[in-house]
Length: 479
Image 1 (spheres, rainbow, N blue to C red):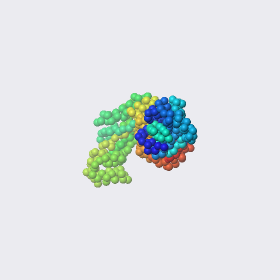
Image 2 (image 1 turned 90 degrees about the vertical axis):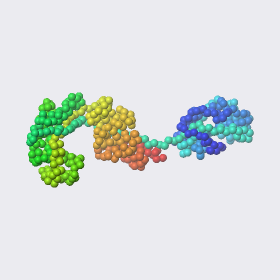
Image 3 (image 1 turned 60 degrees about the horizontal axis):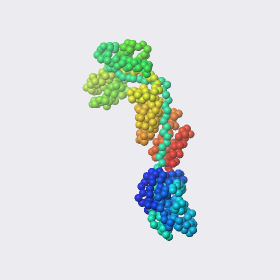
Image 4 (image 1 turned 90 degrees about the horizontal axis):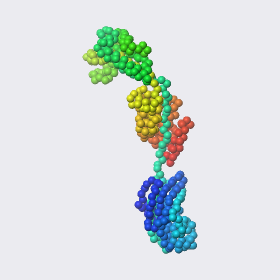
């Protein structure tokens, strides 16, 4: 038997099947269509043998032996013998055991070619092995006249890759898609007056911002329906709270009348509210300022003192800084915020939805994002991008987080998936909480935490059939 060292000399690894024709040495057998087919219990070898070029003298024999080896282990497959007439009969008479172990041909009586197939029990070392063909020309007294070893094919078992099905959660469609646009109008008033005069200073432009927004929506009535306008007036803490409260209320009502007249649309309801003194605005202005003593002043602003007492305390404790606040902060607080509420029609055309994703994603429901993603190849860059943009529009939605986490896992981005899954609450998913558990289990498995993943898959396998399949995969991955 030739040694393992000889068998693996000059090998070249590759993927099976390897189909090629080769001539080991002059007068040898040629092979083609070589394949190695592993199963869980057997290794099967197939090839075509061409005897047409074989040349064997009547006193010689040619042993043809397929061999499996990993460089250390050697497994010989059933051999073939091509023997000259004298040697053929000598073997038949004197070495019956050897003649039984060989598929023996007498030269001149062998077929031009034949298909060779053999199977042997699969052993662990065959996970990474080669198929070689050893041909030995023998002479008198079974002496070796010539020997050649050629690599025919190679097999390398791929490591099992855990690849469970990712389950995306279908969002519930919004019955009515209500949206809003909001902004602020900075209005000027005559001293001590509450009436909004449209032609006073920049008031016309500020009021027009509200009108233009409403008209823009009305001009696209096929998609939008204006449902109402909310106006909220703010006054600064300058002066007494009682006076500021009256001013804020009166100025807001005056703005309502001006806007209603400018719109010339009696069908749009306009609601009003007011804030007598905008101390939240004062706090925000201070936080963004570089004023000396701003922390001390913020403590006063955020205290439980009544409004007039706050203003008085700041003025008395920090007179120079108070003057700056009064000149720079208070004027900007005298304003009105507006919110325009409108209804958006549902979209069913995927191309229209995709266009909206790029132009005005706010108009879309989470279900419409899902429809657009489903039109793409799952796990593709476009699919993942849509899931991420859906999350941008619905950052607190648990379903959006689950779907974006699944999309991240499909791209192999476990870090992103982990970040998203850590922010999800079971309670936010209601009856679909099992999909969150399944997604977490997939994440744990892909992270190598098989025991934790198995526990999670087990808890949902009665509700999610894919969990049972995932458990089967986990069992293979552990082997």
